[in-house]
Image (cartoon, rainbow over all chains, first blue to last red):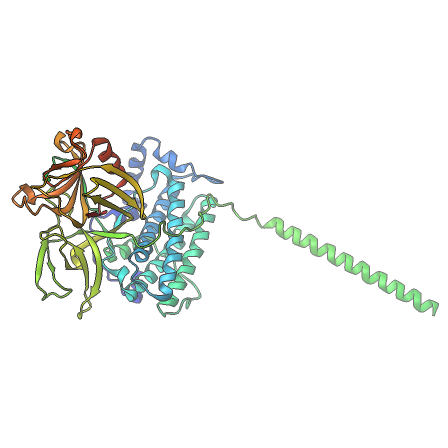
Length: 233
Length: 258
């Protein structure tokens, strides 16, 4: 449950995603905004059809599956950015540092797979401001536990909703990997890796609320524009 | 004796028959069971092999300025102010700073050491992490050689671009030191060519120049003057060169002028 996640990891609720990018993504699969998403996808010409052209064995047969894939991609973006920044900042020590390299590479592979599968319908990568968490060993591990637990519960929540069995096979494969990551981060944070006999799923609303509470999604800076320079010349 | 041998042979035969029957019935049951369980679904796609980050060594890190903030001499809210930062540049782009380190103060607040676009050149100082935005990382570095009148872009330490340049005339020297790229303008002025990068370097002479006398790296409408000491401090290059540099050099790239 979200409250348990919050209490266990210390993540605070109530801070708000500044530009709403990831929340919009997460909420796209909600009834309220679903129509708008589908309309946007259609406006993009063959974007939706392009997204359905999955490589390899399968094809997502429904817009619902595309929604769920984009929802998964939004969480993978968050995780990949988090671990990649931690690796690049180089502030972590010991086993946490090694874990970041391994898990970060896996999350980036997840991102690439979803992007390739979704094609033109893949959502854009949001901008993340991790507010110094990647530079503090304890805060980093606490947040990593929260993210991994969240991903496990989110995959569990959506997998049964997938229409395509071929996509369900992918989701289950990723879900077990995320569960391994969760156990690894819990071990590094010195909390019991697997204490429960049964894991509960989380709904999209619950996941969205937890992600919003981090305030990690921010508006991108605008460092390019058209104009007349006033440099010294 | 003969009777015992015959009885033993019959017993062995019976056991063998039972064993065969049992084995065949087990196999049949297993086959029947297999037929009742479908094969695993073939995944719609497979996840590629995880790969480590490209490039060797630590990349350069830059970040946006999220709110107006004083830059201090030390990671301490009581330390002297050496400069100030605003969230916007004079070109109306998001202001960015190059990150050079971090430290925690006694109260547990994270401070970031940044290079500051201010005079005197090469000022660095400390700002609270809370005043900064998202981190970005680059593996490029632009090296400007004032003696050789050339600019070289390195990626991962290897040169990927080189061009002849124009630099400041003796009366308007191009400043030397460590700087960074903080904006990219698609220029609307022929004088600057089609593209201009804004840097954190400032002219020490033209301090009253509009918007503070910042040094740019840009194209030109006078390519016949290159290479040479012809500018007011900016680094000029031919338009085809600045366009190529525009494809290769991201904002946040460190700039060494020597």
